[in-house]
Length: 435
Image (cartoon, rainbow, N blue to C red; front, side, top):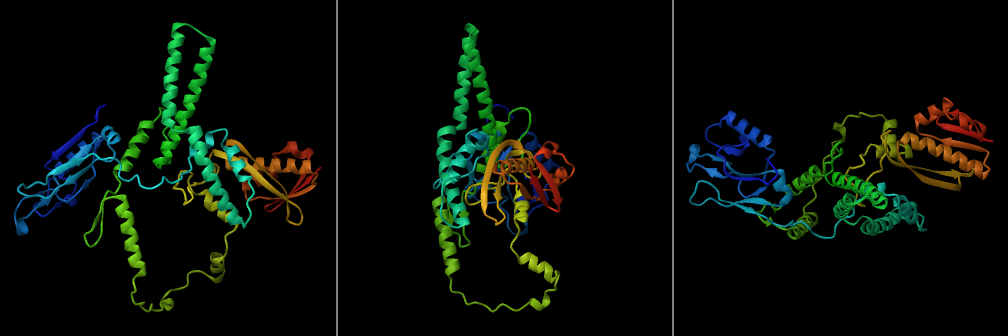
């Protein structure tokens, strides 16, 4: 609508769809379409509401009775950004044929409990990120493999919280500080040229660009948008999207017996009581009939064994690579990593070198910045071969699951390494003689 926030409230005397009426004559379809077109063209949203479904009644009885939602509150993106938790309450009708409306401006009532840990994709853009992860991951932990993994993830979570607070703080605050600094530096340069001030201005401008990129990444992740628009910065777009998410929150929960929960604490306790009663209820167990004879066999025994077996590492990797990097994280707060299926992203290389008895003799890992999974696999092979050469290992078998890497080796793309190794390709195994 414009720069200033807009709110439209009252009796619009038209519904938006047939589900907003009950009884009476069919509504004018042209009027409904025009009303929806006006809302869409104006970029308006309907404010969340509580109370009755219909706001108007014609006061008739029997088949002549008609109900409809004619009263509503419409807001634009600017209003939503200022008041993301505002909502409308429809009061019971008394003497009027319309329900009274009350608009409530409340602080967010759902700031409940400690904030959950969420891995931020903007962290990986910082040059000290991998150093911190390697430091935490190198700490010794005693136990089984899964116990070690869980313990290290917990330690990493604590370290990332502290690091985020000390290094990043609040990104919007850092951006505001840099903007003020750049403005002051530009004013100084206008009064008189100085090389030191110019260098500081360039450095601050580059730092501001980095912080703005981090803020866009953070907001896009919070909004769960899998794309970011190119060209002009779109911070306002993400803020509006996040405000709309807050606006769609459920502010009230009502049980089947009519009991209403209006706060996070009440919803929490109500859910605990409901499921405790439901799960502990001593209902008699009914005998389940045997329907196996009615189910036809659609897979053979070989497929059945494969489905019931433990998935291979290759299958696990392929399943993980299909998960989008900005998908919802798991219970530990960590999402999935970036450069899957050849798509560019923050990536790294690593490998484990074992002897002929399967015992580990050397391990390596390093970051390669922005790259694809194919590039990471090929660089990992080269780093592994270099490590074998330094260790004096003369014959190496490399197991690959990347057809691209196998094809590149098969076409002798790495001719510079022909002085150091002899390669023999057998299925997904590279037999390499290091000389």
